[in-house]
Length: 481
Image 1 (cartoon, rainbow, N blue to C red):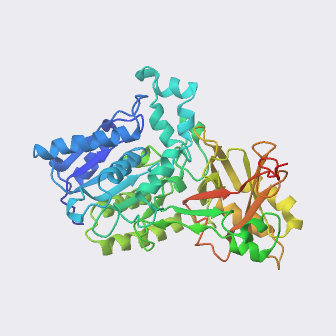
Image 2: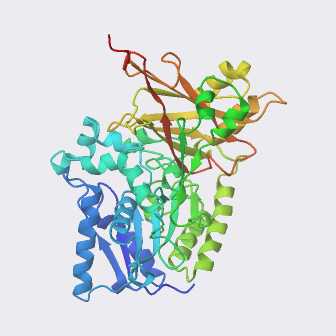
Image 3: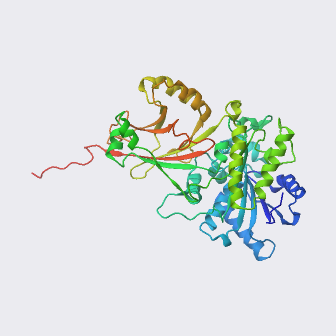
């Protein structure tokens, strides 16, 4: 296999250093990458005052110095691990979004277990336990601002996704990803840690630190505005199918186009640490699986054209489907998805006191199936500590089909509806049409639209806009005496 001639930079994750990637550098040298073209990067991830944005700006400055000194040539390829993906994406979106192909510094961007959409470990890292375990050698600093960015559903992640993935404003089409721009690849393990203290962060569908759904760079977004139409408002107090259909979410457009899918490969027997060392035989991993992992990695770094990039995406999808075959998957390897929810009122003010429910279309079944979904299908709900209007709902997609859809009676539509209810902020203001039990509802998924929303191994952003209604007592008008 021909090797790419570009220089290659490796960027570590939170609480790590470049020395952890010496085995990876050694593997690359042994497979034809020139040692003189390999660079190991370091950044401060454990200083409480340093943010991801700070690291990205410092990265640009350091690279400019190397370029000016003639010690680095463009373009280069970039390997990132874990939090390093957020640093790299922030750097690219902040300095090169909209750049011409000739000015784009990176061609291939290989992400190893990237925390593209957060990690449950980030919250644990800021606890006393985290400060003892990780901050002992850093004056009990754990990188507070970086962990804030890493928190599931954080404001930082919403903002970064808007800058590099989604075109939320009219005419916002400038991108860093494209045929003549950056080609991202994602490799992520799906085996939780098998030993040691790190098992405390284990969960199904993850590598012990990062969820597969949070690693995948292919994300989807939509806005549902309950204030947009009379039909949507009427829907809040009805079970009218026509009203529900009119209240479909408005999908967000991708900056990089709707036909550009980033390659994702899921590895069965690699965890968050072992994915950084292809020379190492992972726990429970066969020699064939190790060779497959090495081949995936080398193929990405050697990708010669955009046509081959697309072919890799197709092949990796087939590979991941085999690894995550529902007929073979045990509980650790179920297909999952993440749903990031942000609720605001019609004035765009955050609404923090709300409840999300998932219900079936036949209301006679709700008590049973709602319980099944919330008890068996939802694996975790995280309320963002920085903004309680933000929630991340972690869903076992395999159980959704087996237990939820499987429980809907024959003849009933195979639909999943999302219901939101919001507590009134006070006696003179309510949400929706009634201060008590006020709620809106819409179809969030159907087994006939499985590829359109709530996709496997993916993070979804859903912004809900709800009406804010003052009472008649707030303003009165009467004739002067």
